[in-house]
Length: 387
Image 1 (cartoon, rainbow, N blue to C red):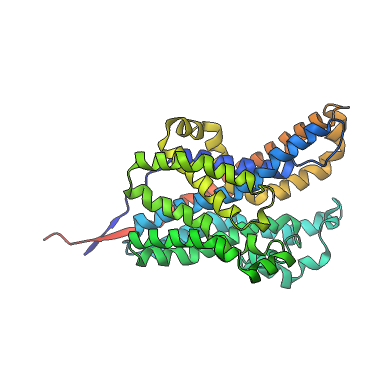
Image 2 (image 1 turned 90 degrees about the vertical axis):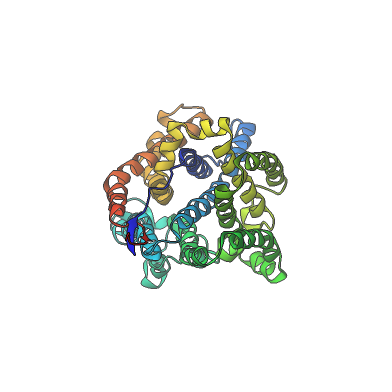
């Protein structure tokens, strides 16, 4: 037997645009939610309602991750170096920027914090080693399920912890189960997830800790497994049939999401499943329906998707840093004096722009060099030696 190197996987450009939409939703959620009242209260409510659905961008990321990671694993499942290459590539993709962020936050920012009101948001106790360990060992979701705002600027890292816990287990499952069994398993998990979230003891815990269900991996597998299910179906089912199914599911799930309270993610029983179906249908439409494919293939959206990891990881730090030195100068003074909503929106656009500029820089300096190292870690497949 002799090894042969992997063939490059097919790239699907609309998924880059879909990722761009996901990160834009998250940013809008954080920069456009405004307090009630003001000069034009109705406009404030409209902005609030629009931004409030932005939390679902996280669910879209989960569906995309399940789809893309399962696709990679299915293509490589017979590789002789299957596990080693997968985990090394994940480390190169996720860890350098993540741990640099932790170093910046825990070690560098405290040296500057007294100059920028840093400790108004964070108590000195959070910098103790016992608190930091949750972040260094990537167990943020376990900690923040009970204390979501204990470290305000790093609380969003729970999503990375959840995905990486999924990455530990899922390659083993894909390696050892046939694709038909994967479909059965994914459908079962998606169907049982609302049942699990509805168990009395789970509801009781969630009443005391409102992020208990939302941030613990076992209660959110329906989003990841929806993407995984679609990855299998995409390889074997008729794409035209998938398009018609997606076209039927999309409006139904969107209606269900709106009816079930889109602004309350932490207490939902069926809400996360409906959201998973909504974004699963959107993913399929972006790959099979020309108008959606064209829209999500737009260059600006694809560019936002390219930098989405950096933006997601760094946006709380960037927004805070942007607000403290510049907020008093710009907000309500240089930007549309006398018109608080125009000023607020303009300032929000500036914050979002700053996030992408920082992400572009980190891509050039950190992410892109790490990505290039992947060429040294390619999947290899055994072939019979020619006689």
